[in-house]
Each structure stands twice: as C-alpha cells, then as structure tokens.
Image 1 (cartoon, rainbow, N blue to C red):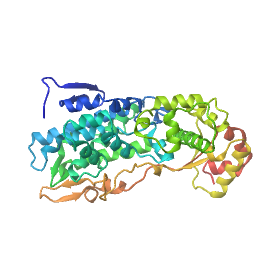
Image 2 (tube, rainbow, N blue to C red; image 1 turned 90 degrees about the horizontal axis):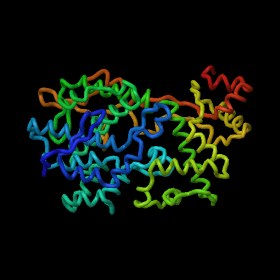
Image 3 (cartoon, rainbow, N blue to C red; image 1 turned 180 degrees about the horizontal axis):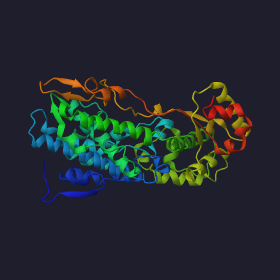
Image 4 (cartoon, rainbow, N blue to C red; image 1 turned 90 degrees about the vertical axis):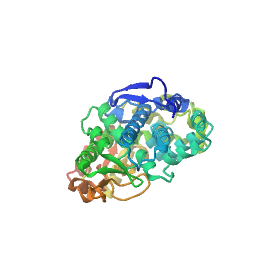
Length: 427
C-alpha cells in the first residue's frame, strides 16, 4: 500500500479525527457518487422529531470507514495470525462505500418502489461510474470484490462481518452518531473497549470473553435507541406521510395524470425503469423541490400531503390496547365523512417493517451472531453467557399506533364516544 508523506484528516464530532492514509480512499471520497451522500440524510425524516438530526450518509460512511480502520490497525499492531492482511484495502473500501446506493429518504422510497439500497450500491461500484474507475485502478476484478462484500456474497466471513454483522463498524458508528446528533444519551457505549476486545479467530470476528459487558452495553444502547429514536411515533408519522406522497404520486402517474411538475428521475422511478444515471440524480434536495411544486398540483390529496410534509403538519397518533377491526373500520368511515381519503390518511403502524432488531442469536448473511472467545479457545454465542442479551434476543422494539388527521380528531372524534375511548386505550 502506498502512503502519503502526510495523511489526510477529517475533523469529526464523533471520532474526533478520521484518518485517510491511502490515496485510493481519498480518491473514492472525491468521486461524485460519494459526494452525493452529502445530500442524503442519515436518519431520513427524524429531523422532524429531533431537530439536530440533519447529519448525512456522507459523514456516517466516513465514520464506518474510520471504525473499520481502527479495528484493522488493532489487529495489525497485535499481529494476529488469523487476520488476512491482504484484505485490508478491500475492507476499507467496502466500509466507505457500503451506503453509496442510498436514495432520498431511502427506507420510504424502498417500501413504495421496491428498490434496495444495497443493490444500488453494488450497481454503483460495478457500473460506469467514477467509483468504479477508481476501484479498477487496483485491479480489474476489485470492484466485483467490493460489491461482494457490500452485498454479502464475498466468500470470507471475516471480511463481510467487519462491515455487516451484529457487531460491525456500520452499527457502531450509526448508534454513536445518531445519539450525538439527536441529542440523546441512549446510544452511547464504550467503543474503545469493544475495539480492544475484538479478535480475528478461525475466519471469524469474535470478542474476548472479558469484553462481554462492553458488548452488553452496546446491545442495550441499540435497544434504547430503537425505542426512543428510530421508532419514535412522530418520526413514524412523518414516514407515513412521506410514503403516502410517493404512493399517491405513483398512483396518479399510473392513471395518466398530467403533473404540472415532474423531473425526469422521478418519471423514470414511477415507470419502474430508472437507470443508474437517473438514480444518481435523486437526492433529498430534488425530492423536496418536487414536493414544494406538488403543493400546487390539482390533485387535492397529493397537494395536501406535500404541504403536511414540508410544514410538519403530520398525522396524529393514538395507541389503542388492541387493534379492533370494527373500531378501525368505524375510524376509516368517520375520517372519510370528514373529507379525507382513508387510504392515505388512516393507517395502523407497527415498526416491524424496518430491519431493526436488537439481537438475533442465529447465523445468516449480515446477521452473524456475536461470539465470545473463552480462555480455552472455545467459541460461545453471547446470549448463552449473558442473561441481559438472552432477555432481549429476538426482540422487535416498537408499539403499534393508529394514525389519522388531527383535524378530524379535533372536530369529530368526540362525536363517537366508543371510538374515542378505543383510541385512548380505554376500551
């Protein structure tokens, strides 16, 4: 590997400094595909709930690179025999580029249009892009190797698990970064301690048994962040409005509606024919500009939903004890009578549609379990040793809510005492 006489440094609020020691990484950072991540928020619509959550996929991706660099440096300093030193560049590139395929408000976009950011990341890495040309400077097959790590098809588990596992650089950075920018303390854990107790061992990344409590702290941080940040009902309300904007616009497009404003990348997306060139033009600046224009569309539903999203006039929520179908049907009928299409303004939400779970003991691609290395050399899955981890394993956090227009609730909900009591959780 070629090093510069003086390394490049990013000042970072989470890691203090991010060190770039390889010109290859610097060249990747300066590609237009990676720079596009400055225009994609890391936490989607969470800025409506936590006003500081404006951080980008760009800064997160640099953070994942930095944690990966620290892990590998620790392996190299200790000269662990089980670490494949020839894989260092591959790991660092995959860590940096793992999110390069994210679209605007990506999880909502993926839900409506069936797009998957990991597949787009691989298309960007392997396609006619600046990223691909930089990677090909290493070797003709290097882009395919990086794509293999990102899409979890690379044959060496130890390489994939650094970027995608249940104790990986991606999760460790987003917990710390999201906690910092949302202003909460739940996501904090002892990163340095975890890095010190991680080991390469027989083709896997494992944790020294004495580090179990640091990992418990990390998993509890995840648990708390899911409850308090990722599944916050206000954030979920904004995501519902956003998804319904995309769903309404797509339905109108399919019905032949003539938009007053429709940029070509969105047209291609609605057609289901979006190519790499147009996908890379999709960012949150363009999307929100479209929403601003759509507030003036003739379609009342699209116009209203866009106005609600841009001006934070979100749907109200309630948490009934049970989702009674008869009450839910009455709610839809009442909202319809108030002038709102229940298809877009009434929804039951349980945040199981996101890929967030606290910890799963099983072994699947990208979900490798956390293994403790005992003094005897035996590997033990952590939930078998830790009562704390065992109690939260497989837990899907979140609570189901019913969402509806606040205008309806203020004006008409009390006209149906039984329905009102159900929404309040009294029934």
